[in-house]
Length: 502
Ligand code: ADP
Ligand code: MG
Figure 1 (tube, helix red, strand yellow):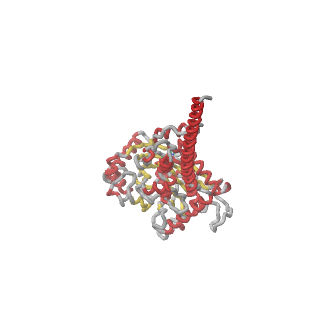
Figure 2 (cartoon, protein in one colour):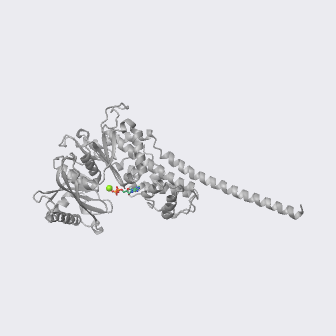
Figure 3 (tube, protein in one colour):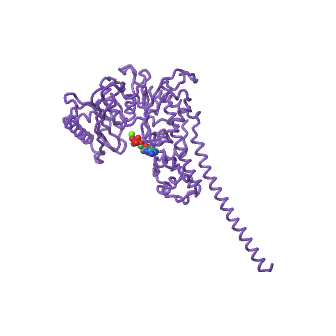
């Protein structure tokens, strides 16, 4: 080989070595970055761990807090509000009743006809209307007048269309009012504060039913507010109408809450004043539950401290549809800050609540082999470019860990209620002595539970793990749609025979 040839060969060899070294360096750097992301994932999995032992601690804490909240006002973060609903519909109700559902952005009016014998109710012309934005900050009188005129229009139309509503009897109305209320009887209560963008100063501490009752008198509508409830109590009412073993109701949608039927002697803060002996429905406001056993991550703590209500609704912030997506976003942001597995840091990852929970459900449940839905959402919503399959799988894993934890905690909450009312199959003196277990139905409502099948599956799995298969087979979770609509009308019917007060 001549000098030139030798030089060329040497040059080639050197270049090959350099390329190999560069590639090796890149591989090492990329492996290091991947390891950093995997460390974030592993840490998330560790802190979110919901072993059955941990869940049982949450069950016990829930039962203890329930006792404390029933013992005295302010005794627990669980408010355990008295609803004065002492009679749940049992299917024997007869007659025509109206329901008015005033939620966040819409209100609606409906009418049900009941024929006894658990007859399927005949539901009439549900009328849904948005609440005009200017009314959300006007006066209580304006708001009540507006709702009443819509109600009157509905009733007049029904009567004109020849329905057989009695014009002699006073019409009974159930009102589902989805704002915090301190009940004073089954049909009246004082508004504690407005939420969801409403700000009507003169109604705070005012009687919600009286406001409506005044407007109805003004407009010549002969109707009585017979029940004032929230959506959870409505769900329990619908559940009990269909199946008298229904004793608990849980809502898992944008937010989360639960209620259940409690014995009179357990409601210590109402002792001596309680005029019926059977018991009443307690609105737990369980979203505000807190326990040191809750597996909270730095992402939860950050989400809470940046929220408009820090230190409130800690349980809700780990479970409900409003928050799951944002927890996932926070994890992805941290991963993206740790390394460039998602490419350059996307500013969209820093936008609160940009990743809504239905989107994490879509990524989590993407069953295409190349996870195209994950790619699409990362791209469309978070403006993250094409990422390798292993990174897309990591995103699915994050959704899985966050959703699984939420669902399992909700299950622990439900078992906590069952434990409090002696329906978890354990003896009250501790231990897990098998006792005769009664069939127990839990009515469930809410978009997160009904529309997110993986959430539902994890919740059911955890119930069985905590209770054991034997006991779990006696606990039926039943979806009850439209508790907030029909529930108030059914309770107006049941309240006809109720006399609870405190
Ligand atoms: P609300 O709680 O406001 O009364 P819903 O019970 O319908 O309303 O629940 C709506 C919530 O359920 C949404 O905010 C969302 O978080 C969640 N949700 C709705 N659809 C889905 C879905 N397909 N997958 C996951 N979560 C969903
Ligand atoms: Mg709802």
